[in-house]
Length: 216
Image (cartoon, rainbow, N blue to C red; front, side, top):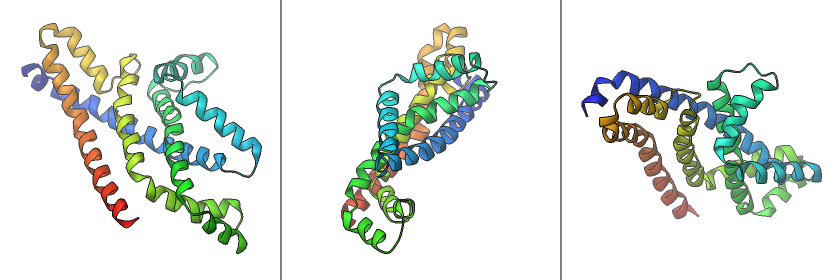
């Protein structure tokens, strides 16, 4: 483990980039996923079709292709975004359909009568969804949403794996190339930092799931 201890500053630097990718990509995915979920239940058929096509295309496309598209194709099309920002966009876009589907399952669990009652009081579709339906859907889908964020944490390694951003996995790849006799220790060090994020999230999901199951 000497190589891990000696390069701890590099690990911490890569870990900070991983957390940045997770935070910005996660927030972007949550906003975009919520919008897609609302479009899936919209009374406007065109919006439902657009949201359905978007969901099916993105969630069936490998993340590596989405990352390469954002990092290589977008600059060709005229974008001057940095690789880090492109990686955040790729993670947000790729994760958003999974959040949308999790939310849609929660929306389906909200009694229809509540939406009908809201509309009978004069609330439009936007207010009914944002004030009545989505708050309950979020509450019912917090455990699966946390599981999506755990997957997102691990997916940040793809951004570094393709070599565009020096996040945690990218740092590990660089160290492994320079220290071929210590690959196992380097990989253990990488796994340790990922577990710092994923294990607490998994425990939180378990606790919240037990809480919601009791209250249903």
